Length: 615
Ligand code: 9MR
Ligand code: CA
Image (cartoon, rainbow, N blue to C red; front, side, top):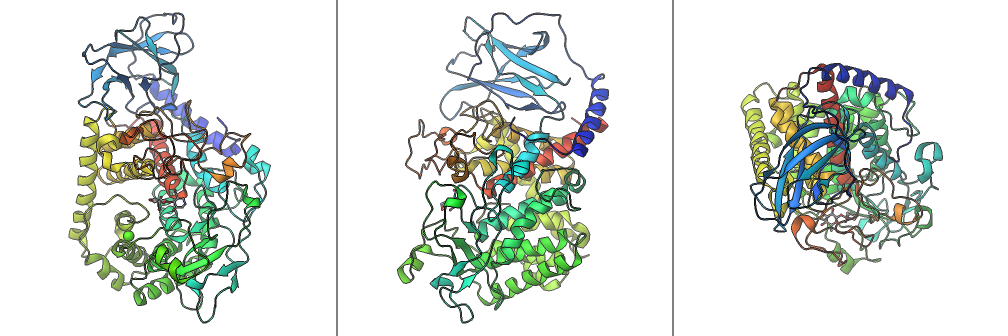
């Protein structure tokens, strides 16, 4: 794995947990049946799909065999220790209720009873082949997610604009600074009395949005909200995590240092004259696939919008809460900024971003990501929720109380449930008379999670994501990651470990138990994206892609016009740099992924340590 070394303290924490875990293991049932060396090894079968990193000892452990055979022969599987070939468990595969969407049969091997830490391999025989089929080796251990958990957040550091990435932090991916963004031009669409067209303003720092180098407020909004909520749910866990970033030695948890780097940029997206927030900081068109420091086209502040103001207000209000224990001054500044943006949005409730219309009026034409959204009730709800929690002002509560929610999975254009997640997680701050309201919201959340869990159990891969082809939009892997967050929230509220199993199944989906057999995260797994649509990676072709990035994933709309081998919803993925519709990386996809991986790791470590898993 391409990880650099973590701080010393981190190692200590981990070894302590492993000792606890090992102590528990003696009581767990494992079937041993003598020593049998693996015969002449057949190559790894690509038809066996499983999480390529492996499993936490107490999790459900499933592999899926994809086969053209329609006869239901229920072949047998054997799990062997990878080094000695010793058999530790055997059983029969069971047919999934549904075929894959590509029309193949799916047979499920459940080896959840293997709980002793170690490295294993799965063998399947009796499926009409002369030789047993073999899976790649996989690990069972509580520590295997530590590196991925850190890398999913370190990815944000690699996306930093305006600073050099030094070798001590970035390892072989060190690079020169790109995009100082200290001379940003006011685009005519954003001109105001105090800042006429071509006024030069400064808005350095922040993260590049995705494979491109622009910085978009709307997409940064959901990204930061998701990361700060991850921190709020697992504060002790994150306090002990080191990402080896330049700020690792200060008092702030590293995840909050990373978010702060983007907050500093975000603050500069607000016009101090009126509280309005520019929609994006961007070049007129996308840059070529060149290194950051060679991408030097002029950068513009483009039109103030209501969505940008409301997302900004939500993020700043949440930041006021999250950073308060570290700096009262910083917290107050964020709250003031949030309130000013809210005021602007109340005065301008329907300024939507319509890029085509803008280009008919203003020059230069802007053709980069639009993040245009016509439905702004959800942004207003999210901002009101965070502002209510930040101020206790009942006016904000009345916005919340007036809404009738049905559950909707968050994405950049629908942030309603980021607001509800925050409110539910801060029950102590809700009005005393809000008990009925709260139960109704919790009910919506639990119903949605339960339905998704049921649908997933029917699917060929036994994963929630493969329950509806309609989920396979641009960035489908982030739909899965956000489903994972929904399950973690349902688990937090109910304590029902079935939801934890579903979150783990979602992790398994992203790391290989899926229709393409890819682990969709750069650098983690045996079959991973090698050619992401990522300018920082493409500019460095002699290096493996930057690690820890979740690619967008299968998307049958194929808007990029690249060559794909399938149009089936969950197969429509191509590991080619041209494929921005299936193989790009993006901050709003990595954030829910980081939440899921870190959140699960935090919970599993806790459970492994105390041996209190309730199945
Ligand atoms: O994630 C965005 C997706 O929902 C939209 O359908 C798509 C087209 O507008 O844009 C995606 O976001 C891209 C953004 O516009 C520019 N930076 C890269 C983003 C990820 O592909
Ligand atoms: Ca919206």
